[in-house]
Image (cartoon, rainbow, N blue to C red):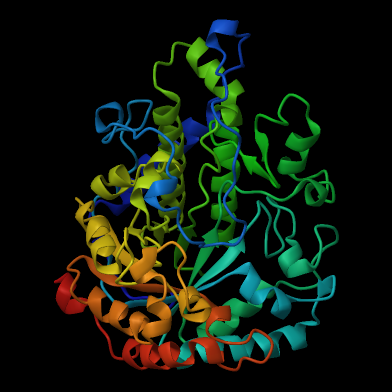
Length: 483
C-alpha cells in the first residue's frame, strides 16, 4: 500500500489466499445454465414504465414520496449466506481503516476537459501540467485520498483489454490511447502523498450511438451484436444500455475489470458507485428471471435482484482481496436508504451486517440539517445503526452541490433555502461526523463544485463554505470516535 496506513493481522493469511484461489477457480469453471423455453404462466408482466436515474453521478437521491415499490421484507432476504448457500470469502481478520479518511471524488465530468481537447487526448505534457494543478488544489485543501473515476459507462479511462476506451478520457469511443493518463495521475499522486482508489460504475453502460462506435473485440460489443444476448445481457433503459448482473458472465466481466485496475496500478482499493438497478420495471431482466423461475427458483423478483447484487458485491470483494488483503473495497449508495433497498435492490443491511462484502460503506448524505425527510445528522445516524460487524467502517459522503446551487427543491418548505441562509452547512456537517463512533472520515463530491475546472480558481458560489470546510478538514480526526 502506497500511502494510506492500514492495520491487518497476518495469521492465517496464506491459508485464506489458498482457499480463495480454490473458490475462484471453481466459480470460473461453472457454465451458465441455458435459458429454457418458458410457458406464458412463467412470464413476468411489466408493472410500470421503465425509468432511469439522471446520468450525472452522485445525484440527489429520490425522496420517500417518490418511492413506488413495495418494501422488501427482511424475512425474505438471505442475510448470512450467498444465494447458492455458501458463505462469502471472509479473511481471517478484518481489514480496518485506522487512519483518517479525507477523500474527494474526481469524476469523469471533473476531469474531461483535463483529459481531452476537442475529440482527442490532450498532449501528455499539457495533460500533466493541468493535472498537477488539480492535485495541488486537492492536497492544499487537506485531502489525503483521491477516489478516481475509471469506469463511468462500461468503458475505461485507461488502455484496457477488458473495456473500450472512454470518450471522457479519449474524446470518443473509437481510436486508441497515445499514452496512459491514469499512470500519469498515479505518479503525480504519489509525489503528493495522495492515496488513490479506483472508482467504478458496475452496471451502467453507454448510449446507443456510443456503443456502435466500440470495437468488436470488446465483450460488451459482442453481446450487443449477439441477438440472443442483446436485451438480456445488455438491456436498454431510456438513454443508456445497462449490464444485467443476473448472468455470471456479466459479473465476471465486472470483476475482471476491477482485477485489471489493481494489476496495472498501485491503487489502495476499489470503490463502487450507486448505479445499481436502473428501474423497478419487471421487463428489465424478464428473460433471466423467467429462466430462474422455470428452473425452480422461488424468490420474488425484488429479492432475486437483491441476491444478484449480493453475488456481485461478494465477488468483487473476493477479487480485491485476492489481489491484496490490505486493499479496500467499499460502496457509496444514495443517502435515502429506503430507495437504495427498495428501488435499487441494494441489500446494504446485509453488506453492513455480515463479513465478506465490503470494508466500508459511504452513503451520499447530500442533505442539510433542515431537510424535511433526511436531515443530515439523523441520516448519518441511520446509516451508522445498520453496521453490525467490525469488518465495516462508516465514511460519510458529502456534496458541495447545494452550496453552489443555493437551493434544495426536495428539502421541503423549511429546508429549501437553508443553503442560501447559511454558509456553514458543510463545516457543521463535517464537525458532526466527529460524533459518529463508527465513522473514519468523509468523501467529498466534487472538484467542479469547488474549483473552476479550466483555471483551477476557487468557485465564488461555494467560496465561503469551501474555505471554512478546508480549514477544518486539515485538522479534524476521527480516531478518538472510532476507538
